[in-house]
Length: 219
Image 1 (tube, rainbow, N blue to C red):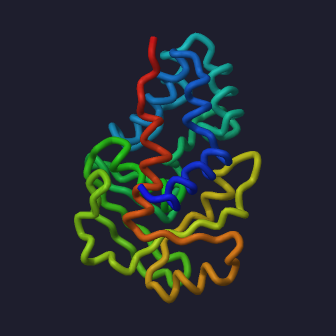
Image 2: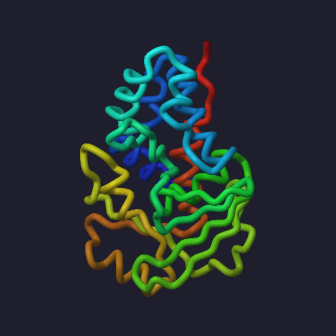
């Protein structure tokens, strides 16, 4: 893993320290959080508030903590509608995993699913600029159709991060870009805040940020 990727992981962890916040949860709440993540892969949707209540003593406290820490996104009724990298919203990044079609909040999130769960995935998305389709067949950190994706890049606009919820700020500016010229042009438009990565480097970035969330908390 090169210095650029390490720096990017550190920078994203400062903006959204999911792994650190997860470690601060008590064991019961940490298990609920991981169960929410696994539910997307196991059945293609989030656990409901009712299902969470069956797993923990105080469901309202659990919701408040996960929401305050920006680990899970809830609607006004307290129903979970997203947990990085997944969302129940119909976003442009669709991932087929374990025979389920799920949506991810951003391009980096989509690339994270396969290494997180060590399962084969197919990502269907599009170039942020040209809207040309992007399709990536992935297993863990390997791109299975790399020859078809030599011109696909990942871009991030760091200045878009907001304090309250990354799902509606930074995630909207973590994108796929198709074509080196398109990627370079996009970066040049705001060179001080934008960064681009090759697809292989982006997968290492995604794995480095998200895979630690899969570690079981010690008793």
